[in-house]
Image (cartoon, rainbow, N blue to C red):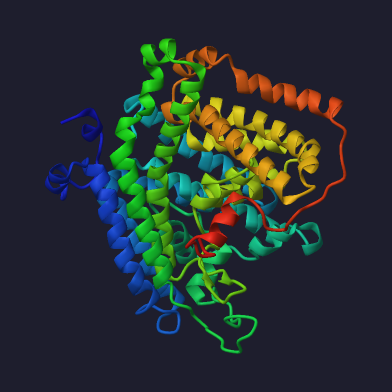
Length: 492
């Protein structure tokens, strides 16, 4: 038995099947748990519809299946899924609302950090299925709930931002509401993070919007079927799994540690290889996140209304916009398209509340939430630097390319290429996890993009006159053009 499997505490029921299909047992258990969740989500949406059952029954169903799924995947480690929210619930019940939210965040992060450190010490560098993944989602849930409860109990509406008003909670959730929210099975294993007000709307049947199918139609659909969206997302997930399994072994990220690669390849080849390798790594996340989105949609979670053409949109609660990320023409656009629920969470509890250096603190919290591998901190600190530099470029340079569609297209093509080279350059430490090997490779690449980002941040405001802002189109960019020209629906 390899070291990875000796540390795995989940069910061995499908161990033989996993061996026959060439997967590790933990990987097979994840797939089987998601298949089970996808099937049970149909029951959640139909037989346990809000018109047929009480909210208590729906809370309980999601909670019980979530606990069973946790035990199936993690064995006795699943106790952490109950302990972390329990400790935080006690903090919510016993502390003054003015300080409760900060205490909950601190307690949840401390608990999660202990789990991260334990795994890092006893299973260093493992990419296997681990309890820390669901705990990361639960940390987002308990802390966002606490901040929303703080807003609802201590602020007037005039003191809240638009987002805070939407998420505000005005009474402490009951036991079954709280634990049903934190442990419901559709989003337990891979997100997306669902915020409490959206969860309650789903449980009580208030998440669908009564609007016409299109501006020219008077027909109203109360509850559009998610089946098309679910089939589409499952198909995309299977395609992503195929790409990841088929091609990543040919471009392993571990090669960045190889002395021959570091010493005997050109800088341009290093950029090319990092771009290909990190792109293929993303397909693992696309698979897990898109399946999770499909499960939520099949439960009835995530409906956001209709497009102008009357097409149902199932993207209110989603992990990722693959097309938008892969064809992003700015770092901001890429970040907003990746792990979207986490972006909302970070904005909710840090970015909108910190008065000084909100970008830096947002990246630091994101790094801490992920764990303590040094590669994470190289990536997120680099991300902060490149965010500042990208803002300067956009503020001072972009307007010079807005005179025509041709120059705008040129700008988009340049920024598309630069964005994806930057993403590969700053994210490979996140995947490799290591500090020393990452710094060695950066040395061989002369820290060229870091230096370029610093120079852009310092000198562009001094030497490039700021022009008047102007726009060619309210909807532009490569991803939008592909959606218009190709078979991509509006709920991608």
